[in-house]
Length: 261
Image (cartoon, rainbow, N blue to C red):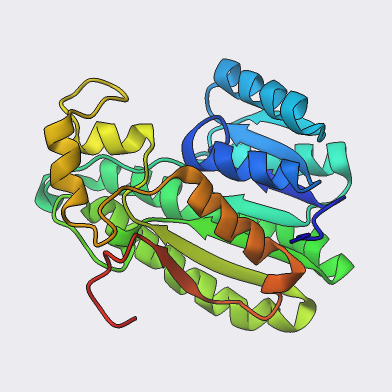
């Protein structure tokens, strides 16, 4: 299927690894030019060069910390300077620390809000004028299944991503008639470094077989997902085929969500 993304301009967060990298790679493979954003400059530059070499697409690295308002403004301005417009915005990053909610002070809460919620608000605010001017745009937020099926100790993420769901649904009502859609994806257990960090034995990027078995037995499909399985839905939502979908919350979780919706 031709997703008709050739010539589109995408800004992708968390693009040096994991889900963000998979999204950037697939959009580039479909013909989009991609501004790739991440905090660490060296891994980002390597990822950017690798995607350009493998897909032939134009890529552009923007090292930035989305937890900072000034960096969010710079991401938008640099992308516009490089590509002159923004068609697609993928809000994706890591997640705040785990822990009991009562253990977090105001500083921890503020950091979580800046990372998960305010980054989305700021980047959308920056990208929307370009999208509205051309009458076409796609915004996709990557959160987690815990945003709609809360888990103990994930409270910072749950609370702030719940804010993203409310923001996105409200924004969808305000921009739908202008050709701009906004949707949110809630991935379940996906094979990334984050999975090992949260559920592993403390060794970065590694899960023991017993730990993996404990995770997969809670997933009806009996396996964790792959980053490309998130990227595929993102690409669909960004294509003309997803034009009539906005304000939605999509869970990609191997059947793990324990509710009817």
